[in-house]
Picture 1: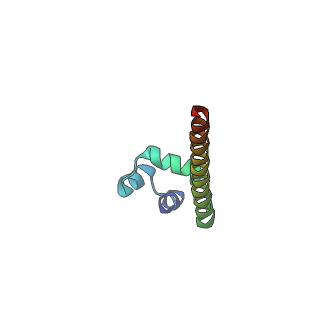
Picture 2 (picture 1 turned 90 degrees about the vertical axis):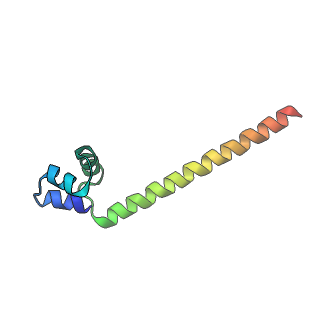
Picture 3 (picture 1 turned 30 degrees about the vertical axis):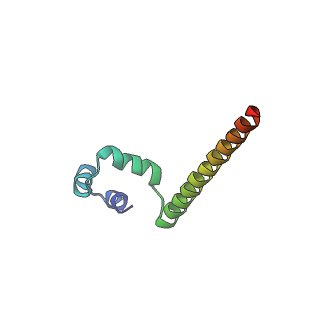
Length: 76
């Protein structure tokens, strides 16, 4: 977030990337994803991404359990 703020303030992108040790591609990816957001929106987005990751894992686990039960019932 600080890198994006510095770029908005007028610092050159290559210099910022060199200073923070990131590639310019990474910087532009961050800008596309987080540009225009404030810290609270960014934190909320991160929380939603974490929740989505957790829900996807729960779904995969449930599918695996269902598959195991189905295979066990088919063998009997």
